[in-house]
Image (cartoon, rainbow, N blue to C red; front, side):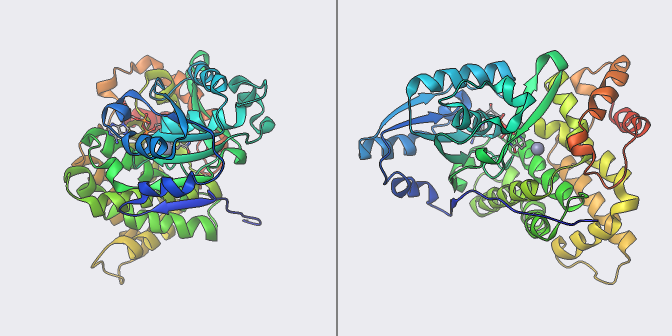
Length: 385
Ligand SMILES: NC(=O)c1ccc[n+]([C@@H]2O[C@H](COP(=O)([O-])OP(=O)(O)OC[C@H]3O[C@@H](n4cnc5c(N)ncnc54)[C@H](O)[C@@H]3O)[C@@H](O)[C@H]2O)c1
Ligand SMILES: [Zn+2]
């Protein structure tokens, strides 16, 4: 039975059409040196230009660290943290997707002491916030701008792991739809489905509570009603803004409850085969939700009533729940995200290794409303092999 629950959020959140210009007021204090964290894709898309102009206009010294790889492992994250330490900066601006924001968060708590990223893998709570952070997501998205999590791969274990430390929650967040305007469709689709997974997993999590439900339901409404337009129509700025809001809300929901078996079974697919996080979640979304259906019908019926425009409130919970599962499946299909591991050359003889690795993600499996046994995990992976 749920007893205690809590909610943590970034301290200052700016959203809207010209939200990025709010950087000017954020930088109004005594900030002397800023490091902008980003990656090559985001840099080449010109998304650091406005922040750079504002910094230059205010006469604040800044450096750009743009070598952050997609879905970094903990060695790569450490290299970036080392680079950051040399800059002796007092403010971090992360402009990018989850990969960039997650490394920036680690840097913010490892700036001046001797702990390493590896130390945090063993004891995540060791470090405290040393440098204030501003997160500007350019995907919609991981919700990393809202969460206290940083996800890194552990190559020797062929797994991805979440370092969770409340000190990593951002001080400032800017949600500006212009930044995802030119997001290439495959990235928009996969990262959008990641946000969708966060919302539906949090809403059906054993740790779901009044706080997380509020954010997860609103996220589901925003995401399910905007994802296709946002991903397929470059001019759909309203739908894109709604996706940014939805992915942020889903991130808040993660912070209060937590994701479940989709994310748990997805981590080995990222760790071993380097399948992008959103894609591996999209592959597992339908099989895991169908597996969970017998115990989450009631929740899915509430989702139906909230998100389906012109739906029939008289339908039985069973039918409402089926309709939501069908809609999740349709979204992945329409967005042309892979629905199986076939295109990723995952050999069948790797199945037992996958099951073993997936079952290690107990941090998230305990949140799943239906117990997942190794046999169940095997069946779910077999379905998508
Ligand atoms: N911290 C959390 O709470 C949390 C939650 C979910 C996932 N994650 C992690 O986040 C990472 C994935 O992040 P992601 O899905 O946002 O992708 P990403 O940050 O890895 O970016 C994917 C690619 O998209 C490009 N890109 C990003 N924004 C762009 C834009 N606006 N225009 C053009 N190109 C752009 C990047 O250059 C990169 O090549 C994974 O490591 C995942 O495990 C973290
Ligand atoms: Zn995710």
